[in-house]
Amino acid sequence: MKLGLVDVAAGYRGRPVVERVSVEVGSGSWLAVIGPNGAGKSTLLKAVAGLVGRTGEVLLDDRAIGSFGHRERARAVGYSPQTPALPDGLTVTDYVLLGRTPHLRALARESRHDLDVVTDVLARLDLAALAGRQLRTLSGGERQRAVLARVLAQQTSVLLLDEPTTGLDIGHAQALLELIDRLRKEDGTTVVSTLHDLTLAAQYADRLLLLDGGRVAATGTPAQVLTPELLSRHYAATVAVLSTPDGGRVVTPVRSTGAPTP
Image (cartoon, rainbow, N blue to C red; front, side):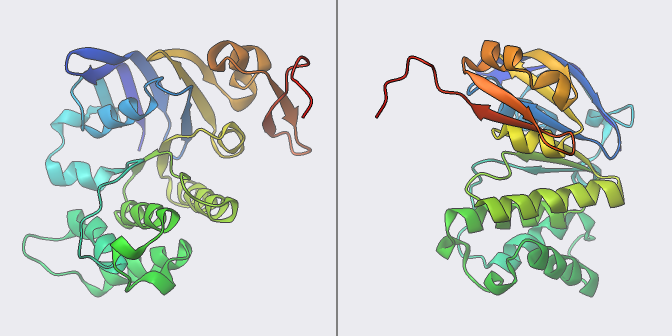
C-alpha cells in the first residue's frame, strides 16, 4: 500500500512541531525518518497514525486516510510508539493477541489462525520463552520486543515504527530489522520508521527523510542524505561517512583534533 503525505503539519497546544512535510513512500518501500533530537520525528509518525491533530493530507493508495473507518484503518496501518504505556495484568501472549483485534468480528473469540499468527511472531522476535510472563516482569528490551510483536501480529499494509530498536542489544536489533525487511520484501509491507542509528537507517531503508526544526532538510537515498556536510550542518557533529564493500554507508563520529588526550 502506497503512503503519501502532502503538506502535513502537526503540533501540540497550538505550537507547531512539524511543518509542510510532503513525501511519498511506495508500496513495499522503507522510509527512515532521521534528524536531531526535537526535530519532530515522533510527532510526524503520530500525525500519520492520527494520534495528534494535523493539517494536510495523509493518503493510502491515493485515498484520504480520514475516509477509512476505524476498523479498516486498523487493518491498514499499525503503529508502534517509542515509549508505550503497557496494560497491567496481561501476559505477553495476551498482549500480543490484542494486535489481532481489527481482524475479529464483534464479540468473536480468537481463532486458531490468530493464535498461530501470535505464536509465529513471538518465535521470530525471540519471545516464545516469555509467552506466559506478565508484562510488568519484563526488562526494557523485552517490553520493546513485546510491543513490536503486537503491531506485527496486526498484519497491516503499513507499519509506523518509532525508534523500534530502543533498548535492544545489537543482536535483537538486527534480528528485528531483518524481520521487518523480510515482511516488506515478501508481503509488500510499507515501512516508515524513525531511527537514531544512522548506520542502521542506511543499511535497511530505501530512502531517508531528514527533519530539522520540524521541516524537511533533505530527502533521498542514504548516499544522497548521509553526507558529512549535511550531517555536520543539521546534527552539529563531526562525522566520517564510510563505504562498506557492498556499497552501504557507515556513519561514525570523528573526534576534534583539539580534543584533550586522556
